Image (tube, rainbow, N blue to C red; front, side, top):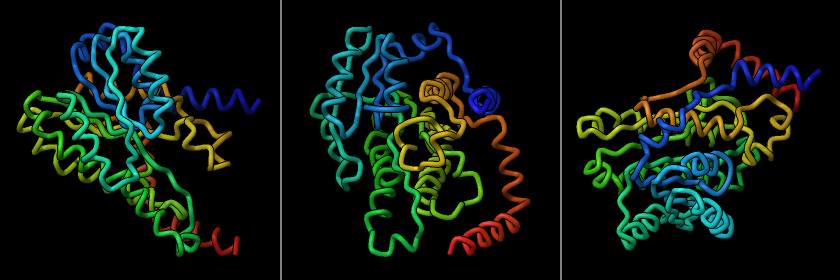
Amino acid sequence: MYKKIRTITEFLFFRAPRIQKNKLKQHFQNKTILITGASFGIGEACARLLSNTQCTLVLIARSTDKLIQLKSELESYSCHIEIICADLYQSDAAEHIFQSLTARNIQIDVLIHNAGKSIQRSVWDSLDRPQDINRTIAINYINPAQLTRLLLADLKHKQGQIIVVSTINAKLFAPPFWSTYQASKTAMQHWILAIQPELAVHEVHAGLVYLPLVRTRMILPTKQYQQMPAMQAKDAAQAILACLIYRKRQWQPWWLGIAQIGSILLITPIYYFYKHLLKRKL
């Protein structure tokens, strides 16, 4: 019974746009597409959807073995694959990626910022863990922003596109235990929103995709998420690529606007609800 309810809920609330294969090939034909966090989950799903297109995929991830495996598998289709191993936790990761692209004479048409770090931890449990803030901010905001900055000259020349994979949480009440994750995602969101008009003047399109819970390995550490309704990685990838094809400045689930209004109107009750809940756990 529970599985049926979850299936119905996912159908109603976690659907994404469907893309026709001819649209996919038409838009991405002969383009060079860089995907961060490409070895698993949403990034891998994007690469697989694009693999039947005559394009160049530049796949970025920490997992060298998985990148090599994915390259070997996908190059049997129509695409050409370049891989760059980079750890976006590191402060010089964006520069390393840029230098690798320059050395290979690769110019980017489409930049998909998919890599991300999710962390659920009380601020009281982080007193001796400065890495919680440093790593989350590095992968969710600093390196994506720096990589965008470094690639803007190419993107301007090629009238390229940028997509940032964000979260619905960035538009809702900030819940306890998610402070660092929320801050990092919101920072990148506002950075992109602020530069969208500047980029548009030069025919560079930038968009944000606000995803709900997606069933990937990122949610595994949060036990309560494992049985909850969620979007599939392939559907999330469809939303990202549809946003690029139709040059949307943002995509979000149909119900997020309603949730935003509720989050604003109920901000005080939500605050006291969390306060009461946390006091009971002490």
